Length: 95
Image (cartoon, rainbow, N blue to C red):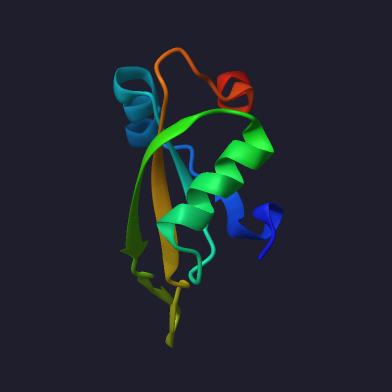
């Protein structure tokens, strides 16, 4: 799996912004098959930073209704990546 296939998109919410500012952690939605080692390598390759820790979890999709129809949003896997002190990802700073 290539680095660009592992990292699907950054997760930008108020909670992840607080994590970024307080603990230098960045949150990404990642491929379900990717493990922590692959995620670490992908972030280091794509953003040219030094990763010290990776924490992963699964986000279950929510049930949604449209009138009488019931559906479900897709499940996803997310990863919180802690960077070395002083490192930044400029993509998040622009948002």
